[in-house]
Amino acid sequence: MQVPFFDLRDQFAAIRDEVLPAVAEVLDSGRYALGPAVEAFERDFAAFTGGRFCIGVQSGTTALTMALLAHGVGCGDEVITVPYTFLATAESISWMGARPVFVDIEPATFTMDPFRLESALTPKTRAIVPVHLYGQTADLGPIAEFAREHGLVLIQDAAQAHGATWRGQRLGETGFTACYSFYPTKNLGACGEAGAVVTDNEDVAGICRALRDHGQVEKNRHERIGFNARMTALQGAILGIKLKRLEAWTAARRRIAERYDQRLLDAEVQTPVRADWGDHVFHLYVVRSGHRDALREHLDRRGVGTAIHYPAPVHRQPCYAHLGYAAGAFPEAERAAREVVSLPMYPELSDDAVAYVAQAVREGTRLSSRRAGGSRA
Ligand SMILES: *Cc1c(COP(=O)(O)O)cnc(C)c1O
Image (tube, rainbow, N blue to C red; front, side, top):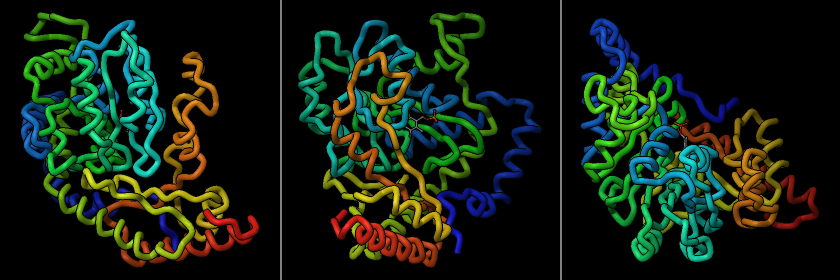
């Protein structure tokens, strides 16, 4: 059996008959940037997330960049975030001329450890960007309390958390601007690049709407220096079709996660921990192993695709060497980078494939721990 880490073809086959006419309709309309298809998707996605405003943009990275700018983050500011995320979180902070300041993660959930925020605070701190990693929210309660106490902006990196909740609230209902990515592999993925800013703040929404279109508030009146970050009409139309299925897809991801959990009970891996504060949407199903590389090789031999999210924390990337963080600066992020492996996870993954992957993991952990002298994961 071959189980790829990820495969979008079955998903497309299931919606092909709806997508192709919608694509033709957009092409026939002659409006290819923004337009009615994007507006309709923005309304639907705002409703889905529980936010007041949704601004469709070119990518998750531009959503983060524009949200930071709209909330007043700029040159000389410091923004607290985590080193254990996709690079784009820090990258968008850097492009605003601000400095990313990292705090370590809480090991059970791989998300921002609120109790470390105090140590990162300086007079220059302007904002906090928690990342809802793998489909699970960071613990927004204490993070929001810290932000309120110190007058900081809070922006959510929700690129991996479409439909996730925090204490029963959808992310758009929390009152904090949330940035989404619709990169093809995300839980809601475009057939190309796209992203969105969701916010309750009317000023922020207006600024983002202008920013994505070169700062224009009306034709040829540029009030700010903006970006070319408009969502294309084709992506808006396709995302609208996919959004209607997102709840069913999320339910399928949760079922797959539960099956993995059950079948990995006797494997020497740490399966994902569900925080009591939120509903996991399983963008990724990530296990930890003390013999990660050996396990991965075994899975590869068994025809099971895997991936590492993320093999090097952001503070150890060459592009961030100038920040001066040494190895060991964030031990939990660095340990996670050594121990994690992401197993195949997508809604169309069959029960047989899940059973096969779990069996291969059980074998792989037995073999690698025996080779390492029986030490436990
Ligand atoms: C994917 C991702 C982004 C960036 O989104 P793009 O649409 O690829 O620009 C930002 N943050 C996190 C955590 C992501 O996973």
